[in-house]
Image (cartoon, rainbow, N blue to C red; front, side, top):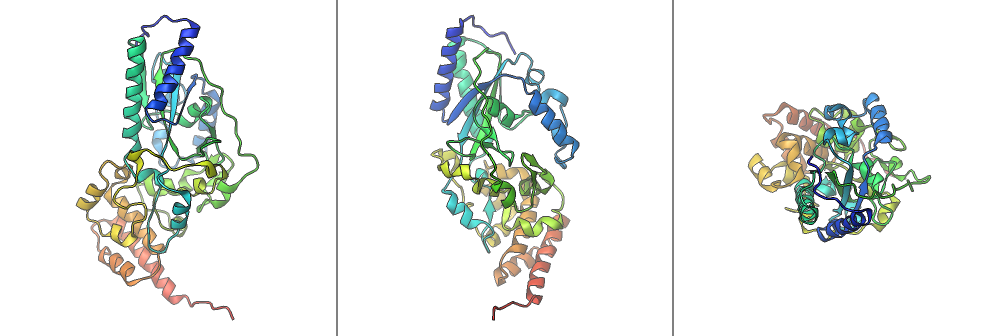
Length: 368
């Protein structure tokens, strides 16, 4: 970072911060705050989490040493972090709830239905930096949106954006948890906000509703059991023990948010970039499974879904089809993919066909 081209009084710095908060609102952020760079408590929690190996194959969580929890080591000269929030819920939550474990439709995590949030937030944060530079002259900064070793939830909590809930997502008492986070590391000595405190109380709704029991204790997530990890981060076979619990969730999982009482305050976003594309909010599993790679690339252009690749897309849908209602269409598309060139996909297709075979052999139980 360069030395900021400003020599302002405390009151002028306070005025600059108020301008920054106003600009954030104008740029489409629903909330913004400023944190200092002392993340020592979060650093200790991260070290404990890594020791348990709960991060699974996400080896990047171990890289970079202390840079993840010491912002001035990642970006020398950093004094403050501007944390921002942008809401993304694309529809009423009840619509999403009705889709869970549906017999023929796919469930895709609501954050991935529209444009890739990395691009949206990064562009807005760069514009924020441009406005600050116009006001104070050249200053040191770097923009981050879930793209570097940054403890974004701990930073947002310190900036007063919300608190980290028992499901390990950030929650705002007025708007719930359906939002993205972004950060602007800066060398400006801005006034900091008051950190938010937890308001989860004795509630355990997220723990109880998790399909794979991934929230092993309050504020402790075993990612190796989490459906978001299994369908997105995991590059290998999905462990058989979790396949039935995955249901129809083919990309991520929202259950812990859908049933969190604080999300009764959440409202659908007005951000057009996050509107669902290509009917993915309620698409049929059989249709998605028969997309060839060219169609998949076309339908996921500019989407966060692109990160898993076509093979894992098919892997995930094969599992969902194994959990779907047994119909001629379901059996037909599974059989059509049985000889897929990918051993990974074939393995999951065979499991799905086996599931339907077992259903045929299981007699129905009628109440007398």
